[in-house]
Image (cartoon, rainbow, N blue to C red):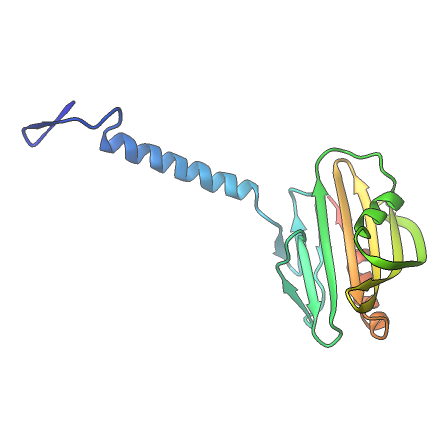
Length: 183
């Protein structure tokens, strides 16, 4: 119990000042937790995601950047009706091969045909690029899938377009892939 203007009042175990202090403290803790879940940031045309340990150049202005669940970066090109996405998943380290990780990206897609695969080094790490033709609903598309892994993170870069315009956007996608660097 405490006295307010000559009257006695009960407030339970917290008085008003203590309650405000707790709310203030939890508010700042929440802000710091959100900062820890922060996404990447753009620095001089480069997307930097320190928590996931990478940086990559942004695509040219004709690629429109959008938010898409599951992707750190996602672009759409209006004229080409094409997309480019960068997704990174960090968790437990995996012993799965790059080929198996690429197959995971193709689960649920129908009428798949692998057109080409290419292994090379990217940021000193082995990567696998797979060119595939698939059917998305009623539409046939080509996909270029680039997969690499380091530590407990798996990095997927994806380019999807109709076959008749696929080659037009390939150069932009490859410039982005070539700029990808682990930190």
